[in-house]
Image (cartoon, rainbow, N blue to C red; front, top):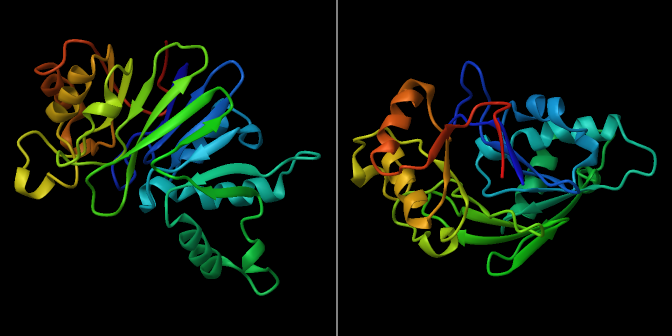
Length: 258
């Protein structure tokens, strides 16, 4: 399995990267988790955006979905012969969200009901699973200001699972779905020492992200969804106090394979 960061900034883009977006690949499958602002630019550097086997969205905040709309135009005006719509797996409420977006963006000569025809859209059942090529995805509700789901990815090559926290505070119990994952991709938007009364249902500190990775038995922690103003280098040092495995900061183009 291979993970490539498309963007690892928190809610606003940084000076050198966009927000949440991750390309995950095997030899046979290419899929994306979240596609926030400025992530399509990085995606195009690594794969043909028309050849994705699927896109899955953790939640419907702008910093996780905005480039779905940019990708819509790229797919519409640059189709491949006999191209199939790109499978897009949305969280519950996704259909209504996308229809509102269509109504907002549609021009007079377009049909809002057909605006996102470049996508084969479906809403996933968080209590079930989603299959995308070599991958099987399962979900667990997080603790965030809107409904959000963490994602566990298992590959048919049994190379070791990837667990993505998505956006969450410590009120979520993610221990079960994270357990045994080889790589934990965890948000760490809250600075070390943040007021716990304000972030317990919002975001994690680097130490809390590291605790999830440690308790899961992971060998590698990827810290993401961080403000550059919160000193990512310092975040790594803070995480090391709780986790003695490998730690990587998510930056555009940074890849790891296992």
